[in-house]
Amino acid sequence: MIFLGLPLYSVIHGAFTTDGGVLTFQNFSTTFSSAADMSAFKNSLLIGLWTALLGAGLGTWLAAAVLAGNPGGLVQRVVSSASGVLAYFAGVPLAFAWIATLGSTGVATVLLQHIGINLYSGGFTIASLTGLALAYTYFQIPLMVILITPALEGLRPQWEEAAQSLGASKLSYMRHVAIPVLTPAFVGATLILFGNAFSAYATALALTGGTIAIVPTQINEALNGNVIANQDRVGLALGVEMIVVVAFVMIGYWMVQSRARRWLQ
Amino acid sequence: MSATGGNLGLAARGLGAIEPAPDRKKRRASRRRRPRLWRVTIFVLAAIYFIGPQLAAFKFSLVLSSGKYGLGNYGQIVQNSALRDALFTSLEISAITAVVVVVLVLPTVVWIRLRAPKLTLLLEGITILPIVIPPVVLAAGLEQLEGHSPQWLVSLVFNHALTGLTPFYVILALPFSYRAIDTGVRAIDLRTLVDASRSLGSSSFSTLTRVILPNVQTAVLGAVFLTVALCLGEVVIANILLYVTFPVEIIQVGQETGPGVQVAVSILSLLFVFGLLFALSFLAGRKRGATSTRLI
Image 1 (cartoon, chains in turn brown, orange):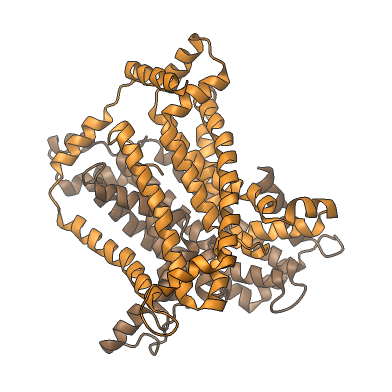
Image 2 (tube, each protein chain N blue to C red):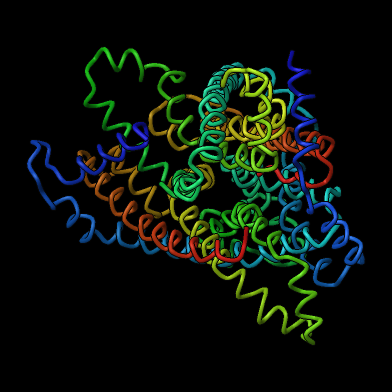
């Protein structure tokens, strides 16, 4: 807690003071009036939202498909190991796999050119927001598989049998039992996915070399003074704004989590 | 010595364990073994989306800077001394972090399960924090701290990647390890084990190392592998604080050698970590039947 708290305190303290140590809100108003910072925020929120929804949907589907299979089978082993790798480790290596696939000389790009589709003349680049979202989804789906699998395992077969013996069809079991029970866990996991994409930077750093306008890039640039010198504290203010967003996500998560516990586990 | 501990553990588990799960799963499996359209669809989609880029990356890594095909890029990895040094730095950090994490987490999990089960919810909430707290913000804070620290602290802690990064990687790895070990501890009959061990006169320490540890070794191994994966993969903090670790060097190596080598290292490192976790899933499966293949 100390190691986590101390850096956070120093960010918050730095953001609210001037170089002389006087309390100020100047740093925050600078970020709010900067068009670049605001569009970075918009991009980060968008990418978090889209990849969270996409990852949550596909991840739940994949997890359900895996669970319906042979427990302890090869498919289950491969998917769970691969999920661990991609969700926790893969930031940088993943970015290079995508560059090799859809970069300007990437394999898929060249293949598509052979059949007459030129991605890059259509305005696509791997360093764009779409390219980044594509790469983020690559670790969002596995993270969703990891987060939602315990909830799916908590669905008791007895419930389905009970519903069937009361005359429910498969569809009405899903509608009246499975989906209501799973919703809180699903929403919670989606919120985590959002937070994960919102705060991720490793993939973006490797994929675009730190040129794409998302909030972590702006912080990095402000700290390193690439654009304008002495922007340290503006970077810290951006950091505090990120923490505020993440805090809302966490509050939401805690609220749905206590609901999720009512039936599952 | 540890063998007796293990046997005691097994015996105690045999006495106290009521496990409905395997039966339930077997039934579910036999009922649903037929492949269905919705399952096949997602598997095909997932295969294309997840394996496609890896195949593309592999083909890309075979193209040499001269334009010919060959394994030259893989050869260059071994010869590149900067990359090797960075890898050793990262492995050192990983090893120390992994040991510290296990020493911290295992007793905590056991203590909470036995004495303070009400704290479980709180701790699970806390374990989510490092996933969502932006690493870039953490790095910014560290940079500030470094700037305001007295000189002796800078030269003691921040001047070397090993001392500068390890404490923070421990923090980042704690939650994942907590989840992994907690899953393992939940699967054993902890109270019976501890009571049995106490009644035979062992201290808390030897209960922990000789009875509990052998019973949850797969989960502990899982935590260790996840920690290693995390330490080998973390780039944002290391990059901002200007330490040259393995992933930082992967990014930098491209500027001298071209993207082929970068992609080759990426594939190898992915395969390495995948191999670790995949091997672990077999270990877990052998120990406890099909119930606890899920590690994470």
